[in-house]
Amino acid sequence: MTFLRSSQILVLSGGRHFKAQVVNPIWVTESWIGTMVEYRTMEALCEDMLHEGMGSIQVRYLRDKAVLLTPNDGIKLEDFIKDNEESLQKCLNY
Image (cartoon, rainbow, N blue to C red; front, side, top):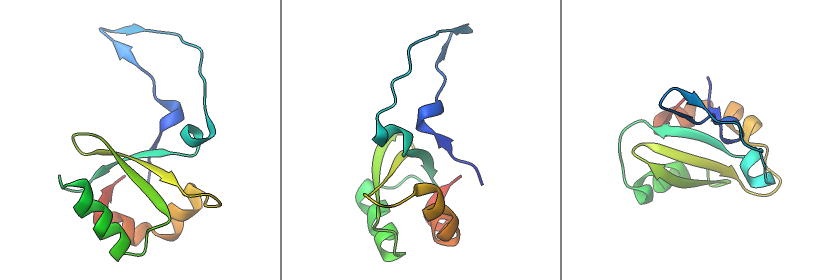
């Protein structure tokens, strides 16, 4: 299983590479990007995740099917994903 860590996003434009100073606030380095299994409203996705017992992470819509997953205080997202892999697969692609 792989997620794209939001602190590792590389921006390419027209085949050109741009180098920029990387500033990683804690919420960015602890967040991951995933995609919805099927396009749904954020309300429906969050409801499904709560129903599956995954209320300890915040889900924010980015665009299309992409979402930003951010853990609540005291939660390690990588451990959370390992512990809830089966439930996450019902809601998110990774």
